[in-house]
Length: 107
Image (cartoon, rainbow, N blue to C red):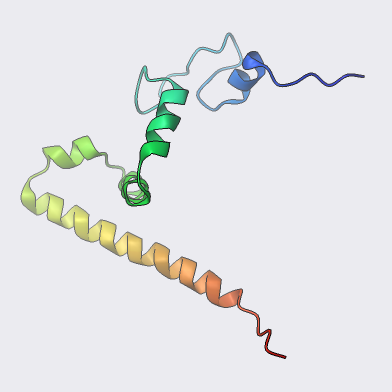
């Protein structure tokens, strides 16, 4: 039995933004609308780590950059504080995991 490589059709079926019937995008599959998945990936890879973290924090809060642009200064300040708190929590989780992984190799 020969194993064939994954083709374009197979990768479309396995991708989260596609349905099994014909590879058409499903409703709500992408926040960017008609932009292709490859373009989304390219945009993501062009981001700095800080931009990626900001986007992830906004996503956790259910917001986008457009939502922030529409907010007033007070609302924006509150969101910035929430994002700071979330970032601290994430960094604490990472720090706690790192502490548990330390091994004394001095012996």
